[in-house]
Length: 502
Image (cartoon, rainbow, N blue to C red):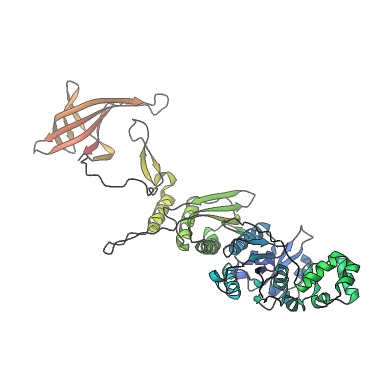
């Protein structure tokens, strides 16, 4: 006989410490504690295994911590803990749509309803191993317990320190719980005192008590505790819907001014974001970096390449170049990364087609040019709604949508070769129109003149301008034909060749 219910409980102990150390690989080899509270009343709220082996315990004050040599004390970060909790819920939701959060102040605990997933992920032990590997890839240490009873899985996950994965067969819940201490039941002080006076210290002895006599002395709460000890208490599952957010945050031990040093930490954060993006089969379309500065200010930059991608060095290079072009104005105290997901780019090439250049190389080149020349000097030229000469603006390059009409046209068009800067010319007039001119040390006789087109504007400011424009077809003495656009500056009475027609 089997149960229709099956749960996998994911337990991450000492969450405040693990949330801080997952992005600090250099500190994992040291004894570290996390201090919570206002100075000078700070106390240990979380610690790693190396600190526990040295004798440090929860609740120790900073003065007591300082008496231990070579112990690193870190301030608690609620924002980083919230980010890690959201990340773990997102990880659990990748294996089942029904996830319930049972986390407390200093640990993470969630239950995953895995009933009916055998055909998809294999036996429960294989699924538990898969979830554990996923959590470990995020830089966290965890334990997973599988049971048909919700509370049995939760109690064993918190108490089974020696086993990373523990699967309980249906009907063996009471035997698996028997050796656990009563502390896993979160008893009140009054209940703990009563059981201590009775000599009850484990779940096995509590489960063996006569039910009627226990209810007579402790009421229905005693019955509930005994059902917990026997692995028989039913549970109303309350699933949550964790949002999908590609976000990482790192708080620095001291203010940092060097961008090169900052990029080492950003590379570690990008590793985790890219790993989570690949698990969802998406790529990073844009990354927003927020730097918290000394003094309370923030510095935010957003990088969006032409194509989404998951190459870490590419994103590190783009962020570094952007921060070089727009450096923060103060020392950095914390870093946050937020990535927008996008579809992975796929290009179908022909068998004999040459390989296309990588879009990432163009993005890096544009970022380098932007860093050297400025934001407003790199991009594509877009004409403005004006007849003023050189009236255009520079906009960032963008990839056209798939629906855009990119089919080539066979119509013949005249090409205009703009001259920048315009070249001066000496013009001879007959009846107020050009009849001959000298251009590039050669004389041309005008065969056809079209114009003039008069334009002017900006009379309200210092950029007042006026122009007389002609399209000329001229020929030199050796037969060379020249088609050009000639403009006369009416304010300075100067003639210039602004464009050549091919």
